[in-house]
Image (tube, rainbow, N blue to C red; front, side, top):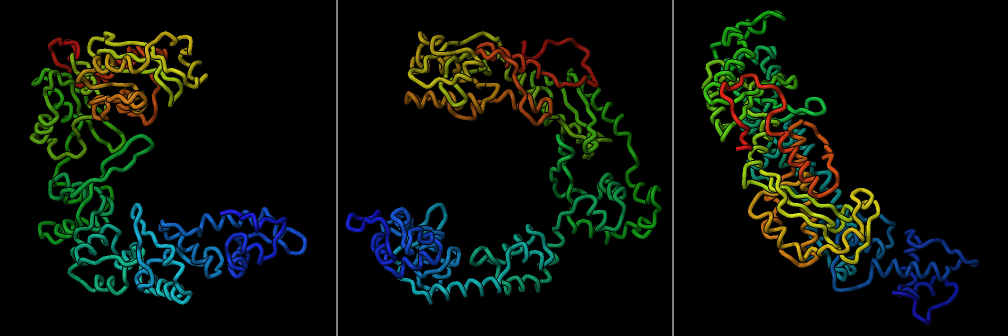
Length: 539
């Protein structure tokens, strides 16, 4: 909508301006009062042509009648304009109350949001809109948000969600809960007892619940008289996490009601002295037991075994060099579960992040398992200028080529890094000519890239550019990222640069060197197999 030729002039009064934008003088006055139009800037309290054109565009954008319904925010703005209300006077959340009262209907939805018909909005009376706003205010007075309702009942958010689900209660408008419905939950003593019994407490909270020391709670756990109902990870420092056990309040209460224990004597034990519960599980020499377990595992399976004590969480980790897949993690866990000293010990775990990566790296270096791929591109989001594919097991180059990207814009910063410019790739084939040979070199093997999140989309863009199909090589499940594995191996949270020479084949070789580096855990073995063996990936 613009200004028609018959209405073009240098300045306008209110009636002339209203006609120019297709509005009534009353609507123009409301626009001015609402602050949508600036004060007159021409002498004589008249509006300039620039101001009227701006008002025309604003009205066209917001209020032009077409066949499309609008969302709640634009619907509220439309009502404000019609009723002469200032911006923000009508809350978009009032619209559902108009629908509930039967004054308005939902015309359509988009991404879960209701849409409303413009003509229906224009037919709404001022009284209907005000009544809907009053109904919303009344609902707010008689309802609660979930956090407030949970606090009123003494529940946490998860317990409140479980309670409402069990009772079949539903939220009302704006996801709020009716106060009367919440009151019915408060009056249900059986429900309250059930929720309280299912409450999960951390070790310190559990000890406080039982009114005993944390060391006495640990004694109950070590003796097998109390088991964790679940675990939750918690950050320890900047780089480490530890699994914190959670205990059911109902299990704690059952122990307190067990006549086996003299709880008064337990609570009366002076600080620094062992309580009667310590006799349930005599102290064990965990380090010696772990070393003994590692030595037996090394001897029985003929493998090197690594053990490591981690200060974060005061935990022991056991890992091993599983030649030809023996032993499996499941076998080691079964063996640990049968150990007379270490069974049930939550401070001893099987496998470590470096050990998992070491097993993965050995598997990737087996013949026929994987290829290593790298590309050099014309900028971060640009075209492929060079590509190489190496056999991960042997290091042989399966495919290598420069690539002519055609008539494209050249990123000079990328050229400074890898040295590839128009002259270097002028005689090289375009991607459509090498697409088939690249896929043939990959075959059915896993694709390893140092930064798979970068190289996989590079290939996808080139294939899409020439309307070619990547086949299985286009699926994320076929790709592995050596950089992410390296971060796990060194237990670092950050990007570790490859240190290659920015040549596709050279960077593939550097990636293969990283894989070889990661074939063994990065700390010395505790127990070493007697027989000499060649590395598994060299077989």
